[in-house]
Amino acid sequence: MLKDITLGQFFPGNSLLHKTDARFKILILLALIIGIIAADSSFSFLLMGVVTVTLVLVSKIPIKIILKNLRMLLFIFIFTAVLNVFFYEGETLLWHRSFIEIYKEGLIYALFMILRLACLVCSSFVVLTYTTSPLDMTDAIERLLSPLKKIKVPVHEFAMMMTIALRFIPTLIEETDKIMSAQKARGADMESGGLIKRAKALIPILIPLFVSSFRRADELAEAMECRCYRGGEGRTKMKQIKSCFRDYAFLTVTVGICVAVFFINRYGVRV
Amino acid sequence: MAYIEIKGLSFSYEEGEDGVRIFDNLDLSFEEGSYTAVLGRNGSGKSTLAKLICGILQPIHGSITVGGLSTADEDELYELRRNCGMIFQNPDNQLVASVVEEDVAFAPENLGMEPLLIRKTVDECLAAVDMTDYAKHATYKLSGGQKQRVAIAGVLAMMPKCIIFDEATAMLDPLGRRDITERMKALNKEKGMTVINITHYMNEAAEADRVIVLDGGKAIMDGTPKEVFSHGDKLRAVKLDTPQITELCDELINLGYNLPKGVLHTMEAAEAIEKLAKG
Image 1: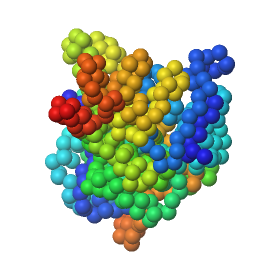
Image 2: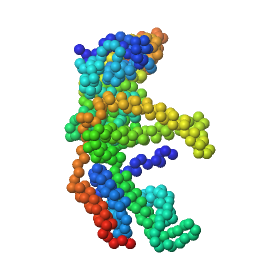
Image 3: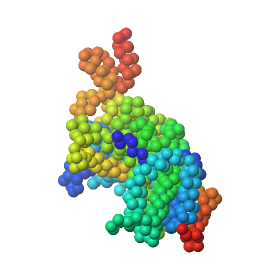
Image 4: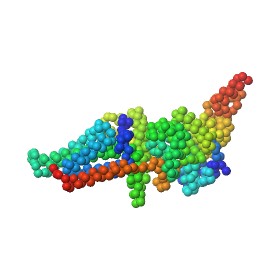
């Protein structure tokens, strides 16, 4: 049952997005998010939509997988749309009954909202989650945030915590599976009963899991000490990330698109 | 002077003078380039000894020096750990990174080596344990024996002079156990490393050049495997066994057959019995 959980959702591949330096991808995504949130006319939405679709195509991630993930967020889409339809006050009244009023602008705005969310989700999936291995991501975050070390933010420690957490997720899942089997063998019932009963049934699984995790942490700390770990100071890295011209070009184009959105918002044709 | 010198060692997990002593005034030394097995029942302080040598635990009294470096000196501890690597029992709890080569690179990265040199060291160490093909694999997908091999590569990457195996084979299947034991032997014989194998398995101990039996915080037996295992009764008194083949020969001797004491290997026993049968 626990084996089904996909970790990190990373799809190994060889597309342009896979090859781009993870640090740049984080910055690119940031620019895209700003662009998508700032967009408020049909032209700018069209632009961001085209950009998102292009990214999806470039990433070579099967559309099916993306649609599957979008479907999981369907509830949020509908919820936002419904809220916007009912609570937006515009000029052209389309339909009303007692206190419920639906405006044409509200409908358009709801549509924009759905588009905006879909673009946000798709682009962040495609740029980061699907195309960056968790390790590269941790590394990129550490390097991007390294200037913060000057103001005593423990950047290296956070990155190390993330690395270790990623390393131990499969181990702990395996262990949870074992403990569940052991408790089931002793007659524990985890599948029947209401919510509260099921939550209570988790206690005999969580406690052994916690205890063993602490023991693991202790042993790991000793093993790390034995391998000369003493924090981030004086530490080097085997992998050297080198950014190439393509990375800079990619980032420049994205920032350009972001600026274009602001430009269209200000001077462009409005609906 | 021996490579590892333990003098007047006393240790207790409880604080203060009146706690239960795991060790009380223990003297022990390990020569450079030696291959020693440490035996002892649960709670005899085998693993504690390993942790004391690596400076993870500090003694109450006495001193431990490794290659002239003292475990009591904070400044020397780092260099000491580089010289004296340790492999732990649970392969899962000593791998830090999710990718094999990243894990092997962990120690060199900590030591602040140049990236290109790290690359070279990692490749060499993976080749030394025959794991080159697995360099990019996820650590959690490996078998227990493979994980221990990666752990050995990770320690070798520090280029230590001594490796302590703290029950490193206890969680492995027989195949993995044999593989790791052979590697220990190779490290000692081919690379001249000082190897200390803390173990439960008598057959493993028989492979070493020297066997130490710990009990009640004292080294009650110390000698070649032949010497130690020829005292079967003394071993059984501290709840330890002799290797199966030694036990068989002991039983035969008890029945009145004239066989040599302290036989360690099956072939050796077979030859002795053949000689007796023909003789």
